Length: 222
Figure 1 (cartoon, rainbow, N blue to C red):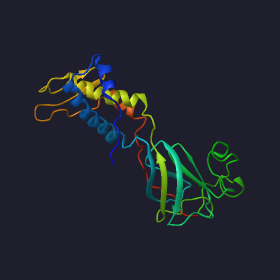
Figure 2: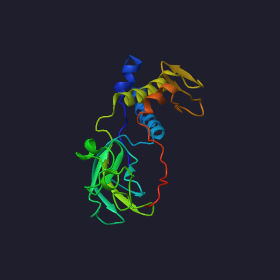
Figure 3: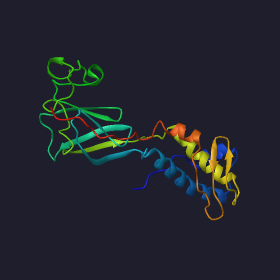
Figure 4: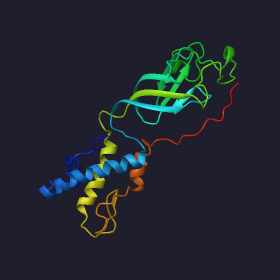
């Protein structure tokens, strides 16, 4: 699947504070695709809006499931082992996490997420998620989710990082090994034209959007 670039040639020209020449426009369009891919690889996120993306994740003995792409716009459907949840009929999204509940059992973010009081185990005993309550039925379960995610409009800081990489590549003559313009950096040689590198300041900006590390659940069935 092809995705749109995170910045335009106008964004690049604005950083360079001049109009691009005809040849630079052709080059810039190619570099914008490269720069957008650099950002995607670092963040491990698509970032562009995607409608109806279907994924299958392993379950766990918790009531939470972290979805890989964000922001989550909508969860359209959900299957557990190929079947529509029945007893596990209530699920909601908060940030990049999908929470499941039986309705009476509503762990975590009670008022914020469910609109009621959070109950941890029987009668609010604070005993934690239980296999007989709201869980994703263990790591052997297959959770198939169809959801919409990403940005309709790419945030400005992502656009600035992307355009900055391209502006640096255009501003630097072929043969330069490394050069910086403001917070932007590019490394390339005659044998590797346009090999872009994110600066530490770029990474600080993009860390906000970067996919967080996934960890396996070690909870056991009660």
